[in-house]
Length: 267
Image (cartoon, rainbow, N blue to C red; front, side, top):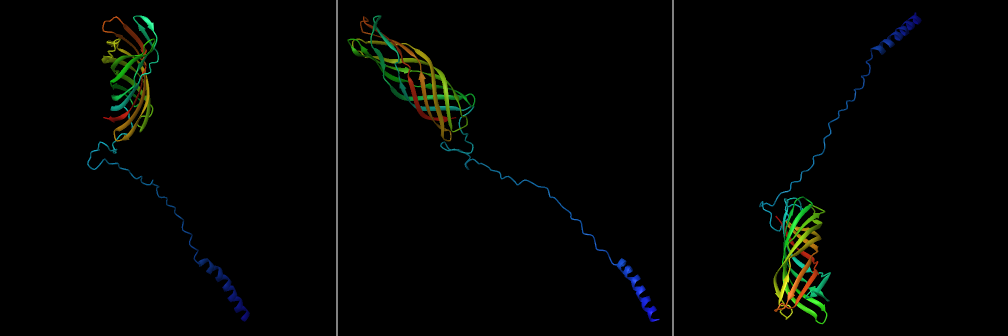
């Protein structure tokens, strides 16, 4: 009977064990991972505000926020320069009463102020007009038997119109080249009154010109200018004594080199 009891207990245990195993709760599945991607936005760009002076007025010698750098279309310039006029007298001839006379014409150099007006049609193209008048002494040198003969003096007014091409618009340093034309009047002619030259006359003349130079912005609307012009003009003149019995005629390639440096203001 004991054997049967133990056998019965073992059988009951074998049946109960799988049943208990089936009733044990199953492990909970792992929670799914959720990826949330937030929209990416660019970092804010700081803004730079440039303000005019507190008074709202830019001084005459100030570079302000609204000051344009360099020169360009629509600019109007007034320039005051110190001008050096250097006559070359490249090729000259003298005659006495129609007969060839040895020697050559010599014209003195001069420094005078010059006023220039310039307007920019485009950023690169401008036109300018110069106004200046210089006084020069005139002599005949190397005349056979006479040596140097003083002829007199004369003032010359050579208005010159030049079209220039500027290479670096809206930059502080702006070089240029130009071509133009000159028309020269001689006035206030004073003969030397030395017996040979009691009367002197110099005809109106003119010719082409070329130039190179640059503008440099110093401060505000103020610029520095340097300019070199080469003018090509041939002058015809004559001198007589008081009795008009002796007439000296001269033909001279004056061809002055004109060097100017000055300050200009943009309006």
